[in-house]
Each structure stands twice: as structure tokens, then as C-alpha cells.
Picture 1: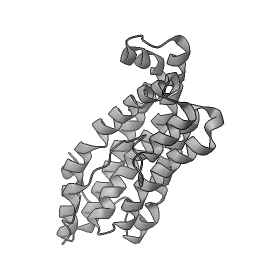
Picture 2: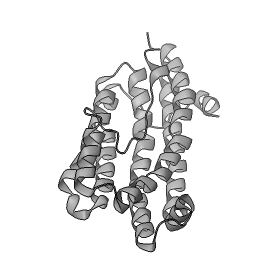
Picture 3: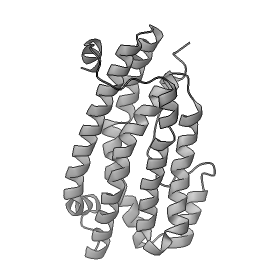
Length: 225
């Protein structure tokens, strides 16, 4: 049955909630950097990327796109399914990229608003820089999050199961090996992990017979609306 676990699919944004050992990431980061100004700046910097993801590529995507996509597959209407997936991917990617660009430009002002001007100039500048780096991971997740649902709807579970662990390993890599860069190393680890989260799913996507070229079909247009 193609219904599978589509209603259970969910992608969260957990910069410091790491698997397979939930406490491992926090232990590594706090051991390297403590829980002082840099740590606070990182936590503030992650809020806007998290918000963008949740607004445009998180719960709404899972509840709206995945059931329709799985429904097409269940009726063996694969052309319509892949057309819907392509249009949805382009839409979500575009919206998230625009939101990320706006947040990138306004990063210092956003940090000041979040902290109610509670950070000093140096801490505000650090948080803004961290935010700008982590916004790249939000754009990557806008695609990889969609792929998780697509693969699970096609009965492919291994890559979606591995992807979160690779994301976590990327963050741990940043904390362990890029620590001379300070908390910026952790932010770069977030991006590395997000890229790995996407990359590991691509071979599985190709094996499903995904069709991403233009199709002469308008059914998916109506479903996307």
C-alpha cells in the first residue's frame, strides 16, 4: 500500500538536537565553546532559519503535498505525481530562497529585534553572521525535506532514515574540526549537514524513476493550487 507512513513524515529543524546520541551534540558544543555569548548568539541566529523552514517547507508541506502526491501514486498516475513534485519543489525553493535573501539583508536588524537590543555590537554582528550562514541550510532543506516525503511515498525508507544522521554528523564535524573558527564552525557544520541530508537522498530519488522534465499535464497544476 502506498499510504505507508506519509502521515508520520516530518522534518524538524534541530541544530543542536543530534542523533544517534541526543546529548552528544550539546556536550561537544558546550565543551568547545561553553554556554556564554557565542552560544547565545548561535541560538538566536538559528531562529529565523527555523521559522522560514517551518512556515514554507515544514508542517504545511507535509500535510498538503505528501497526501496528494501519494494519492497520485496510489492511482498509478505517476506523470501527475512527478509534475506535482516538480512544481512544488520549484515553488518552495523559490519562496524560501527569497525569504532567506530578505533575512540575509536584514540580519542585524532581525537580531536586534529578537534580543530587544540585549546584545552588544560584537554579539549582534556574530549572530547576524551565523544567521546568514545557516540560511543556506534552510534553502537546502526546502528541497531535501520534500525529497524525504517523495521517497517515503515511493516506499524508499533507507535514505530518508540515514539523512538526519548525516545532518547531525555534519554539525558534529563543525564542532569538532572547525572549532578554530569559533561558533562559525558549528554554523558551517549545519550547512555541511544539510548538504549531506540532500545528497544522500538523490541516488534513491533516481532509482524511483523520478521524472523531472516538463510534462504535458495540467492535473498537477490544479492540485498545487
